[in-house]
Amino acid sequence: MLPSCPPRPQYRKELKAVLPADYLKPDNQHLLWLLGHLAFCAGLLLLLKWNSSWWLVPGVSILIGHSFGCMGFIAHEICHGGAIRNRKLRHFLAGVAFSPFGIGPLLWSKWHNAEHHGHTQDADLDPDRLFLLDEYKNKPVLKWLYRRSILLRNLLIFGFYSLMMSEQNLSAMMRYVRDPKLKAKDRLAILFQFLVPKLLWIVGTALMGWPVLVFGYIVPLLIANFMVISYISTNHFLNPLVDDGDVLASSLSVTLPKWLAWLDTMHSHFGAHVAHHLFPQAPSRHARKIERQIMALWPDRYHVMPFNEALKLLWNTPWIYDEDGMSLVDPHKQVTVPTLGHGLDQQQPPARKAPKRVRCKG
Image (cartoon, rainbow, N blue to C red):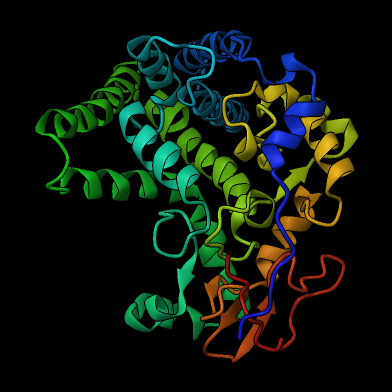
């Protein structure tokens, strides 16, 4: 017989009763950041056109890549549609912000807003969850990866961060384009929203010279991929699988040091991911304040840790869910690690064997 679980609080209802109304009221302040990043990138591209000296190129590529990543966070906020009610305008602005990645707003709305937010950490329905044990058994590349040393495996995985956002975009796009249930006009829209921005960036920078194409677009895109996936991987990869929509169980928030608070603002407070999953249309600038209230109400349920600690745990933790969905396992080395809320101790290296746990239902 499955053990009974304590009743889950009505998070949104209880928070709405204590939060100031303006914390949840959508606004357009993030659009000012978008204009700033577009102007900044344009200026740096012109600088590269005029001067592509070896000592200048690395710094410019990093700055453009960082702005690309920030634009991705802004596009994410735009796509949730809280502030911009007009769908066409919302998709246009999100498309501009997502353009370096070639992520179409229609695809993102279906893939991220509907599937991921609607079924977070659901083993059957969340397209962004980690691998299941059955998937490991049927994927030769995973078996090969887990036969390598932990160091080599992690170097390959974390190195792939620089391509992962682009790879996930392509995978999601092909999945939807091949879906017979999708309308033909939506298939065409998804392809159009990928191809046109990509061509504009590639052709536009190429016309400015190959140094601009390579160091003003290709290298910055790799940097932006790494930056965005570093956040995304901490959002859920240390959490258990759930089948009851428990946002606090399925999400992790990460924090930056106080001296990097300005960077948290530039990143649209993307690390405040628990607040985002509870109120996806709320302005990101209020996310940390919302999370302080979450901490006050449910300190035993709310998961938060420093960004660097979360990345360290991801380095030390296998990325395959065991059959119980509450532990992560290295099938080759027979090492099992509990997830957050089920024994994962962020202060200790999680390289120990853990007993099987029974997942609560209902």
